[in-house]
Image 1 (cartoon, rainbow over the protein chains, first blue to last red):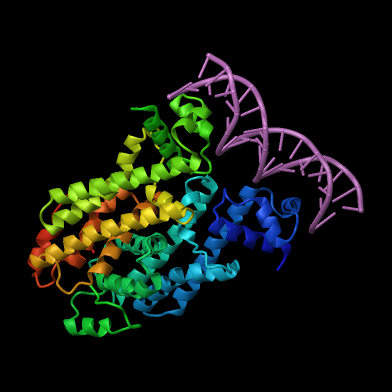
Image 2 (image 1 turned 90 degrees about the vertical axis):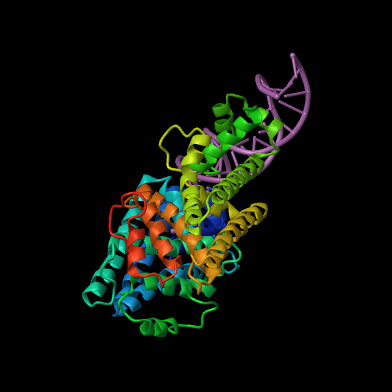
Length: 221
Length: 221
DNA sequence: GTCTATACAAGGATAGAC
DNA sequence: GTCTATCCTTGTATAGAC
């Protein structure tokens, strides 16, 4: 890994754990084991470090979502891949930045925060949401053609609901101790699927569906 | 309004718009038209200002939720009040702090952010979520007794889903330009209600329900 | 209660040697 | 590419007069 990459990963780590303003160039330099001014050889400013950190997050996320959705075939599997991808991203991010301690990180809150502060970022972030919205809408459209997704569906609305449920749950799990993400993420997905699957299927099919996936801790609703 | 309250409201305003670290005591002093050191007569430190700002948000929100839910009778109305309360809170907050410009504020992201930084805050915030969870669960339980809420319902799971949908949507609307909160909040609520209402009701009842409320911009799903 | 003056620390950034 | 030395600004906070 080049020095430039190590600086970027260290920045990302501190930005996620401590926040942008609470991160100092000294902290980053110490973590990479170089001196402060060396950072300026690789990056123009502290702001530049933030921008590249967020670009890195969004690029990686987009790449992983595209990759994992493409590998699946049925809309149900594709949506599940989409879910898994975003839910797993925090964990993967922890590994990428070498977050040895058990500090809870939350990339969603970080992105929301800086979107309103820097116009350059807000455009890139909006672009990210446009991209994943497009992917989701396409899954729904293809599913409708195969009669695997409800026909009377406001797809734009469905897309927004899906994204806000995922992100809302991740964010909530970091502030509300009762919510243990890994225990309920499957349920969230199953519940959402009930809104998308055609209703004309008889109860029996639904029941079969209820037994799909890992053991859940409570009744579906 | 006392000087102390004016300092608190100015702090809250800047914390919401600029962020805690980007807010300086000079900005607050200027807004209240006093000098910097005078702040220390009323508050112990800058951190104290943050704590009181967040307590103010949570206290006010809890109060308004409790009040508006109590005023309603049926579970459907109560849940609607709950929704309205949180969706309206941002706007009300803007008025309270005298946010003259059209700066978009988002109290949810602010709360999520500082919950992970200050233990004192994380406990108060967790307490807030426990309280609104209790309120929601009670609505569901009472509704079940009256056969107005689905009987086979994992209430704990439902509560978490409701909260994360509301907060997820509010947060998403501040970063994804396509999402216009006021256009879709009614739909979000109606969609959610479909998960809670008993299924044994025939289609007819559902259709009547679809015509309830303000004109919507798209088909329900 | 509010002010002036000031201490004290720390951050981002640059100059210029090696 | 990386370093030492240093500049400059700004922030929180306190002392003490009025």
